[in-house]
Length: 259
Figure 1 (cartoon, rainbow, N blue to C red):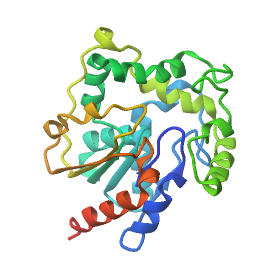
Figure 2: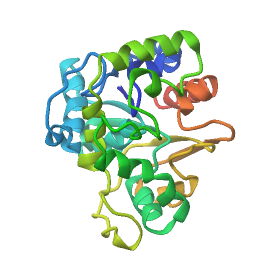
Figure 3: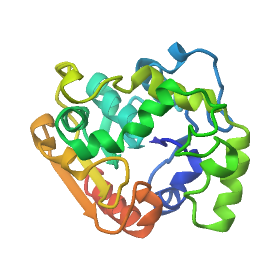
Figure 4: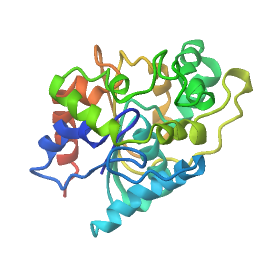
């Protein structure tokens, strides 16, 4: 089950779906607020518990007891939380460009570069979608949200998907779940349970939002094997920037775990 982040939709996983579908049943969801999914009103409707529940509901709907959980960005946070809170439903965990919550919170407390890079999240928390500067100094529109997509054909699909999406819902992920403070003002993190499933992580080292230092110590927060793949030159959307490497690595890593 593949879960996207911001600003994105299920189509982000098209390369990985194509690579894996011959051997696995592959499902990529639109998270709530995006594209064809429901768009409930209210910040509380985007609480992490509900986002995790959405993924669990997909697995149950397909008649399965567990799945390999794959997530990028906000989808990565959902995937981490899913694995920690529903270990019985997590066969494997694959994370793309989202450090473990412990690593992210540590960097938000102590890393000036990460604190600066996360200023956009503060804007998302305090500015309305109608503010012309809310999206990195530009209005929040389907076109500006799709500006990171380099493939012209794919970008057309993104513009159409974002035209069907709810911008306020997108910002509610940040308002409900992202830390409201940083530096010394950031409270100590809760005690997260260790991840019990094998973990595969990808991180594009040119990520503009999430500092690579957040990866350090991940091995202390998992119980089984951790495979970490760092990709120079790939940015935040590593599943598209390095699609072939990500897809082939996922395929071989998962195939080794099929019994």
